[in-house]
Amino acid sequence: MSQAAYDNSERADRPSKRDLIVGAARKLFLGSGYGAASMDAIAAEAGVSKRTVYSHFQNKETLFGAIISDMCAEMGVPNATNFAVDQSPEEVLKAYGRQILKMVLNPEALAVFRVVLSESPQFPE
Image (cartoon, helix red, strand yellow):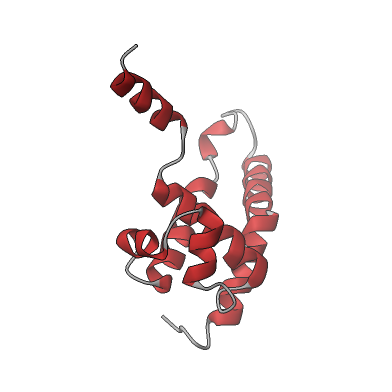
């Protein structure tokens, strides 16, 4: 295998710098809160330079927004197609409600809710 092919296959196994930054920011935001997480700390946690963080995200607000968007996409929406057509409406609604409750009570979802709630006075948008 050529060195270029080896380098490309090795890179495919590693997370992108954006993913490293988002993962680090997610950890710090959810663990310490938005205000306590600095861009310097995020860069250090991700193992990248602060300049790299800013090349991917305009500011801390856009980074936080990206994390929220990613988490919403990960959680998705409850899947109503998993229910049998012979179930009563009551059974379907209860099962659907349990899916929503499981999603909302996810520890990471609760952590995001706490961060958003605590920062809402400073960032009402």
